[in-house]
Length: 120
Image (tube, rainbow, N blue to C red; front, side, top):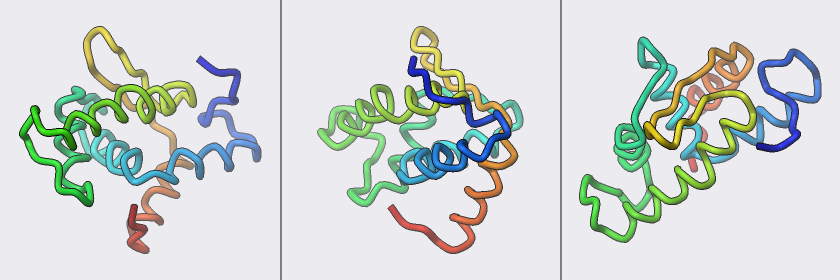
C-alpha cells in the first residue's frame, strides 16, 4: 500500500489522483462495471471479461490465449492494486474479488469521460 491520499477524501489534491485512475481504459471499464452492479462487487473473472470485451485486441474468454493472460496480469498486478491503494476499491487477492466504494467525484468524471467517448 502507498502513502498516497485517498480519493474519497474531499481535497483539491485528489483531483490529480482521480484523473490518474481514469487515465487508463482498463480502469475506466472495470470501474464502470463495478458501479453498475447493485452490490459493487465483482470477481476477477467478471472484470477480465468486461475489460477484455473493450480491449483493442479483442480479448475473448479463451483463458489460454496470450492476450487474456497479459490482461489478467495487468488487472491483478497493476490496475486493481492501484485502485485499492487509492481507496476506490477493496481488492481481495484471496477471494479474487473487487468491491467498489462509492466515490461521487470519481463517478462524475467517469461519466463525463464516457459521455465524450474517451478511448483507450
